[in-house]
Image 1: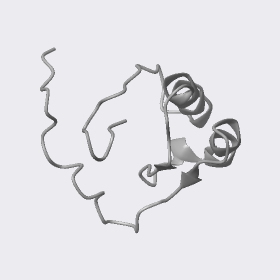
Image 2: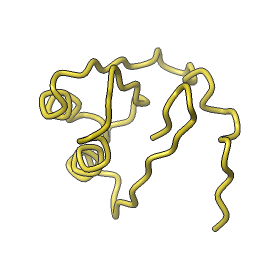
Image 3: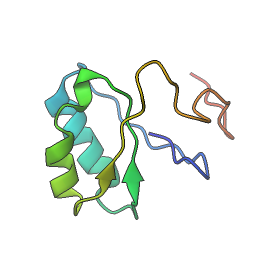
Length: 83
């Protein structure tokens, strides 16, 4: 996940693209972060967004329109990662 304004990156490796694993990873990463909104893509892995919203004190979820990229997501991050 990337912060929209600062481009700060939070990431966690998960074994499979399942909604329960994505939910667990998001809660671990975002539990102590100050949040206003979350804008995920429209993938099936975010189907547990209501449970994530409840666990994160009712933070708002906004889903983009189909086939429209999130503004700024295609830009390069401030710190490139080497693998």
